[in-house]
Image (tube, rainbow, N blue to C red; front, side, top):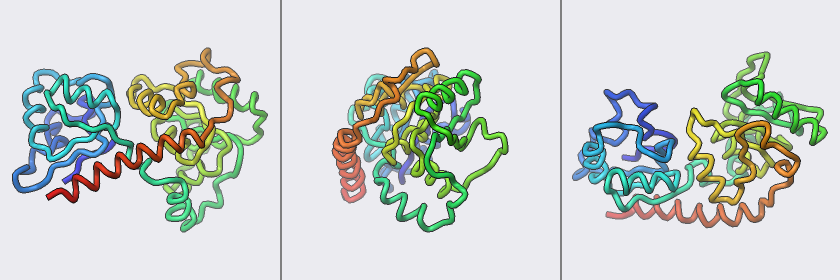
Length: 259
């Protein structure tokens, strides 16, 4: 049985009554493999209290553990005494853009999704984020702006294929979402990501540092300038991604095939 990914191990997001379920406390590790793939604590520290021994015992029963952020590997070691956690990619990043285009987007009607221009995907609407969007729009001379979420006055909802097509079609992306950032990278789109402190910063920092894209992260409008809008060298990014994909795939294949 596999648990993950995303912030499944973020204590603040889990009802105290059920948090042990996310550590597979209902599975007998002597009879069934217990695997964590790209689990995330959301922050660079464990948010729980008086539960260290419980989590340590549950982790020791896992066949294999992998974490989405490097800081999570340190949490496993320093908080729970678990030394064998591995750092892997978010599962969405195990496939390249051609997979999403050929296997999902092309098989559905996505004609109402605009092509070109600026795409915004904002989870938490704030006036400052609107100012950031306008700065990008004006400085890149973009006439078209597609608000996928946030500032979407018509409250339009989109299917998964349309959501993916929105990123595939965009020229530039502004987002405060982790997966908005991820799919900007997958579809090789220039982007700016606004750090979302309340929802967890470490997942942004960890992935951007891994891909040497730290300059795409801003915390406020004052950090935004034209240098942050320059073209990304996606050949370099792809080279790093290919290496990390192989590590992640080897973790999964090795764990699942190991008898």
